[in-house]
Amino acid sequence: MENYPKIYLYRRIVQAKLFIDNNCSENIDLDNIADEAYFSKFHFIRQFKKIYGKTPHQYLSLVRIEKSMQLLRTETPVSEVCFSVGFESLSSFSGLFKRIVGLTPSAYQTQQLQIKAQILKTPLQFIPGCFAEKKGWTKKEQF
Amino acid sequence: MITKMNHVSIYVLNQDSAYDFYVNKLGFKVHTDAAMGPGMRWLTVCPPEQPDLEITLMAITDGMMFTKETAEQMRNLVKKGTFGFGVFECDDIYATYEELKSKGVEFTKAPKEEFYGIEALLKDDSGNWFSLGQKK
Image (cartoon, rainbow over the protein chains, first blue to last red):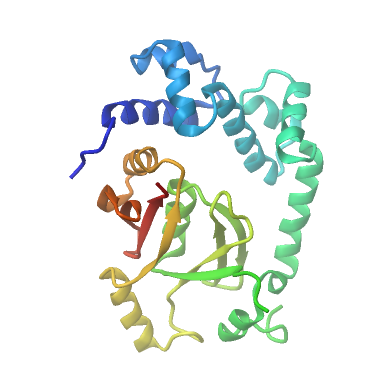
């Protein structure tokens, strides 16, 4: 069933990517990942970038920011989020977060918690009226 | 003038399991997850680079939208793999295929070069199928 070009190369790079996904909070040594994937460091970085459009280091930073966004949507304090996703300083975390997301971590958290509270309070605002009606979720009855 | 499509529905057998499939396996983002009363939930997700298209993961339950009989028929049709709901796009189909496969996603067709591009076929946890494509 499977027979496509560079299949073994793909499998090794994808496993390295998944390793980054699953261990992003740890102190990941990208040299080690290259070794594990049986690549020289430079070859590994080049192949990774060709497939994912980013270097492994850029990708790791992005995964950490995405994970921090998830945690900020819960009520975890910003400093706790910063260290638990693998950043070593609050200023580098905040700076990178703002560059990628466009808001500071605390502004993002406030915004997300407000949306969450709004969904809880008036869920019908978030549902197209036709579906709500079809499902019998009408203002008078419950919301 | 219609300008955009902003909601599309996929009928699923179980919303918890669909959440796991679309969010944890496919990597989609949760847009709205609202409890609408006992056993009722409005759950929408977006493809990672398309935040303004909400895919509603619609549970097939007896009630206002379906009669008991229709719901049963619909569940059977979904399970049988009757419905193909669309085409997903990715940058690198071989990498996406390897990643999704290692996360347990079932493919009915491995990536193959066709005259229109490279295509694979995958199934969601309910039985709905999708094409996965990469432009040449």
